[in-house]
Length: 120
Image (tube, rainbow, N blue to C red; front, side):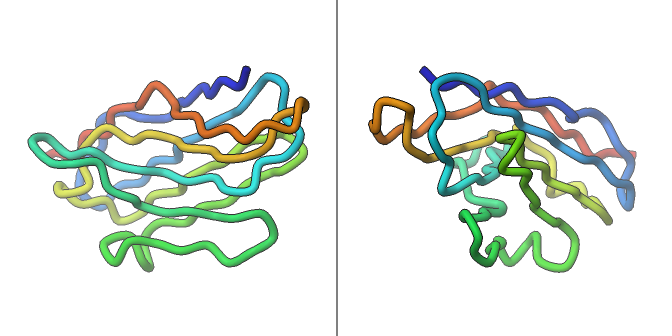
């Protein structure tokens, strides 16, 4: 079984920065995609950024130029560096990982969510 633990959310003023982290543990053989999603109040969950194994990352238009996703495959960890935060970035951020377990089974898991509040 694979589990994710997120950290790094909090309250920040507009223009500020936060870094979110998400670490996976369990029977992991490889993780081929790591991503961050956001669910704003009253809205559906949406993709913010995703980074595949060895490939190019992709971002929501709202995140381009401000957010950076990066991963450490040896640590099964992904980070989301968020700069120039805006009020509309407020929401619960969820980590998502898809991969293959030690038993050769595909898995997709979600983190518990971490709240990011951008407010003055």
